[in-house]
Amino acid sequence: ELKVEQNPLFLSMQEGKNYTIYCNYSTTSDRLYWYRQDPGKSLESLFVLLSNGAVKQEGRLMASLDTKARLSTLHITAAVHDLSATYFCAVDMKTGAQKLVFGQGTRLTINP
Amino acid sequence: EPEVTQTPSHQVTQMGQEVILRCVPISNHLYFYWYRQILGQKVEFLVSFYNNEISEKSEIFDDQFSVERPDGSNFTLKIRSTKLEDSAMYFCASTGQAAYEQYFGPGTRLTVT
Image 1 (cartoon, rainbow over the protein chains, first blue to last red):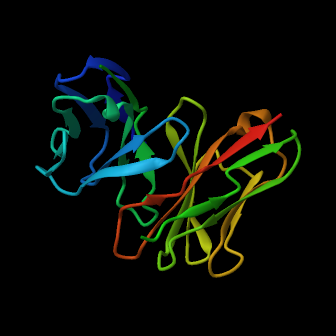
Image 2: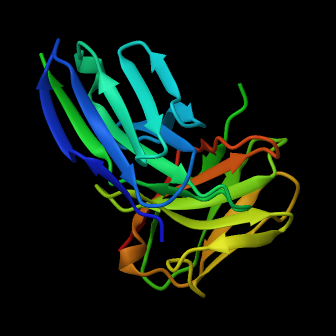
């Protein structure tokens, strides 16, 4: 059974600081997704990582994938308050159903 | 930009009642999914649907749940006899034949009293 674990689960940081969220998964997969969720809202796709070594950046967020280590990171640079949200990573099995298995989520709070 | 839509946005029902949650996937997509998220918890897979049949379902998706694509546009999730623990946000998602990225709808918040 595929397990996806994120850490930390809660992160409170100051504006302007850098931090990294980690996503570990338990079985071979080279498709990993990062989503953002604001309270009471749906899942907004941030990044799709499809191969070992993939790195994508959008604004202050950068995601990377190491399939050998079964690890993805989401790095936040010079955080701003607008990035406060819950961030989920998800892995799919690349089987026909392509179901996503989500991590527990990291609730990020950025204080002014 | 095409998007997945869901109705209603919030449904309140009494325990034991049947509910139907509706989704309109993106029009040329072929794979459809339901996920649920209990308040404050992670998103959990319920069921996937392709070519008019279930392709995979989770342990959560027991005999009380069913899915249907009654016409060319709607995709529904039915819960026959709701329980208190069915209270959650239910998300529909879809993806195309050659694509892998799942697009999520805005969700239906189901409250069972």
